[in-house]
Amino acid sequence: MESDHRMEPYKIIAYGGKGEIEEKKSRFIAHVASAETEEEAIAFIEAKRRQFWDARHNCYAYILGEQAQTVRFSDDGEPTGTAGRPILEVLVNSGIRNLVVVVTRYFGGVLLGTGGLVRAYTKAAQAGLAASDVRTMCYGYEILLVTDYNGIGKIQYLLGQRGIPVEADYAEQVSVRIRVPYEDKESVVHEVTEATAGKAKITVSDPLYYMRE
View 1 (tube, rainbow, N blue to C red):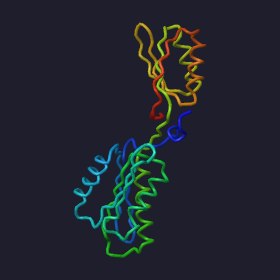
View 2: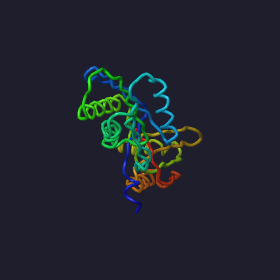
View 3: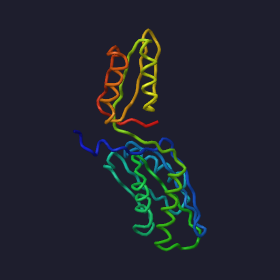
View 4: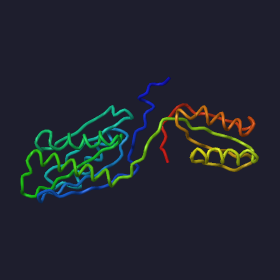
């Protein structure tokens, strides 16, 4: 049995969003992006710093890796623990991986205090995530089924019953590409074999993460 950690689903950002809140005349603008590497995360942070060069603070946090192996955050001049860590906690609680969030603050002239800052950065990060397109990555297999035209109807019916999306390519034979959760592989292979009386050619990939539709 593979380690349970690797089999747990996690979320990613398909499209990053922007969220904005106002707290006692200070504006907090959150920008969210996906990042596969630390270089990508840092490049996004630097781009936002250039874009909002006139802002008082550009605080950030990012989480990289399927098991959140890399975690960084910065208060960028705000009191310690009032900006970067609250943003990071929003990301951790969301279950999303491979993302970076920058929250830009334009100071409005009124001090918020540490509690007020924590709340404001938390709310801004939550607004940014709420405006983003979040998808789930599942651990499983990609399976290629090659069948004749007699078998395709049975296979499509079977997969339809299970709610499995199908990518089909119609040539002399029909090639069907599907992705199934780790625990469903054996039963899907068994059912397809039975439905086509063993005539479908079935190729199973190594275990991988795939985006759930």
